[in-house]
Image 1 (cartoon, rainbow, N blue to C red):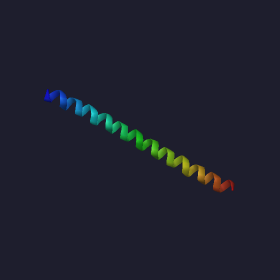
Image 2: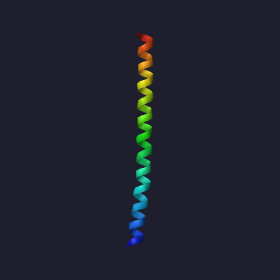
Image 3: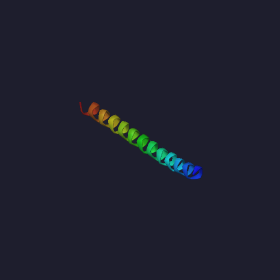
Image 4: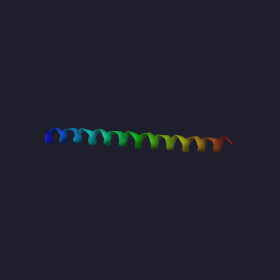
Length: 45
């Protein structure tokens, strides 16, 4: 019982870490896009 619980928790933590990494990648990509867009508009305008 306890072993199964530990295994579930380990899997959950692993997936949580993957989710956090994905979230950070999305955020950094979004910020880069925003920076590029604002730089582009600054050059154009």
